[in-house]
Length: 224
Image 1 (tube, rainbow, N blue to C red):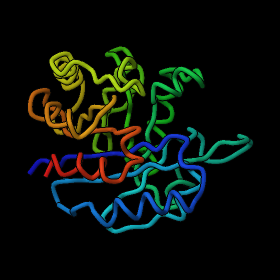
Image 2 (spheres, one colour):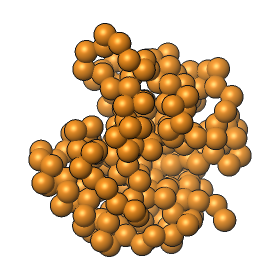
Image 3 (cartoon, rainbow, N blue to C red):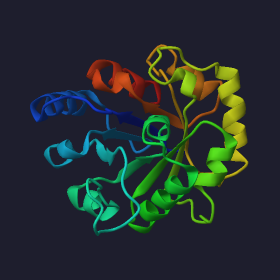
Image 4 (spheres, rainbow, N blue to C red):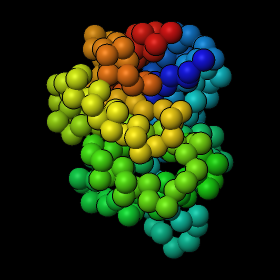
């Protein structure tokens, strides 16, 4: 049975551990545990140690490519692993834009995350980003790819389903047959099903809706 994924990216939210625990606890209470569904929440780094639950995996929103050293403000894959994280989002369009991350930088991060035994969620908008970020990587066993069209990130305007399906096929030609491909970009419970049934994705990377427990869980139930 093919496994499907719903990954929540909280970005720079919420503002307190108390609120993070409230959101996490509400999702944990409502979400259904299934072998065919992996539910992941990616809070800010500082909240990771305070969030534990059997039905939900924990991920991080970024990491550095070095394991240790004089890199002020950075967090290594091993540090994340020791905190309990199992997934790491890499190459998100917001980091490419605001932190000026290049394909080379993201490529080094992907290699570091995979070497640490974590699962990498690589975000791309176009084929060139996919190729640049995966250069020299032959083992895709712990890799997920998320197609995130910039026009749909944080805008409330989801990407055209047919166009998304074409990009899904383009990505599939470049990676292993069983590597999960997620859709991200203004995903909600009203449009999620089309991206699975019509565009052929294996799940979602959810932004703003992941901060709303009821809405996020509705999205997971579409995949059950």
